[in-house]
View 1 (tube, helix red, strand yellow):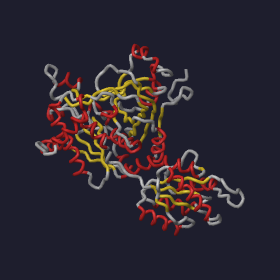
View 2 (cartoon, one colour):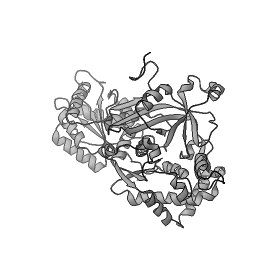
View 3 (cartoon, helix red, strand yellow):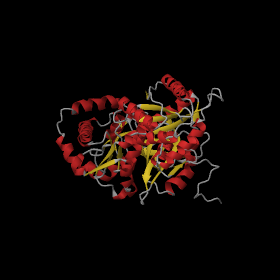
View 4 (spheres, helix red, strand yellow):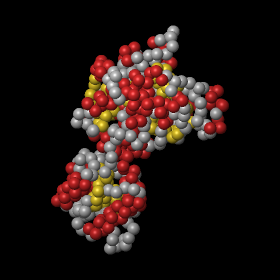
Length: 490
């Protein structure tokens, strides 16, 4: 996958000058050795920071080494002023972690357990939000594991810091839920470039007879195999894919990374002559997620998932209930789940082929009813349809309220191996206590119908990313013994 940052970790040991500096240096070296055993080779600042001058020297070393994420390691108590100043001046995500005692508790006691408290106080004075693990004190192997958990978090934060969301078309009135204030995105450092559908159409027409079309068609044929239900539409789809890729390269500007939110109906079909879903699936697989219905926050949510998982995400409608007949017939694979824990996640055909059991290029049934009810499918061809593979799944959305306040939810579950007996890219999804989550988070907090989805469980990383971003309300599917504030106790 392209379009995703590479994390180059830097690590700096800090030492309070009334403690032996060798204690921090030796403990840092042990952590670096443990990281190497896990395949992580950080940029190690040779300077152990005891004062402000040391902090500037360490930052210079990190810059020369190309570090874009920083681990501040308290090998002993640490100097809270210089260490937090260094973190503040570092241009990238920062993690703080501390050493547990494992040696002579008299001569070699480091008190980093205590130093983390003062570090956190000074980070607060500087209005800094950094990553601090749930229990941020450990021996070298434990610390190395905590640092590895920081990597996907850092990757998402780096990506967002140089991300542009490119949009095409106005956000549809019929899906007003996708329309939310965009100023909080600028506050996060995310750029927005809004374009007309007419701009996109002009660029698409300029790509007619592009010499690269045949190669893209061949790629599509190889990917679809026997699932190529509408081969005649492939040249148009290939032309559109080239249009999007060229638009990205010509318009990324000062940003390194790009995601897209595009309007995909109903005028799209009548003017372009196809449905763009299959192209959107391929873009996501390349690392350029596309959210339909000009869902800017959906596109951003997808991109965060791509950074965290290094895998292609998708965007789904939280769509329909599972019939009782289907629930009763599949109780052997639904043990532990109530019927209200289940729903069907659906979208027209934008989920990458790798996540579908038998992907097939088809036409969009709902659009055909509307646009060409009495003829063979033509302008409604272009969806990639199939049942989702059984997998863990994480539903995630970063959203903005009408008042301009960021909020979010994260819910983990699994895709069950049950035939949904329906059309589109679709699957039966089981989320523990989904019925309550649906009522007291999705409805109560006015979330739209779209959810970004990762085909793995990554809630832990997402929760920490949201905290660092300063999102004040992070909801999740609470267990049965933990009521929601809005839940009727009677």
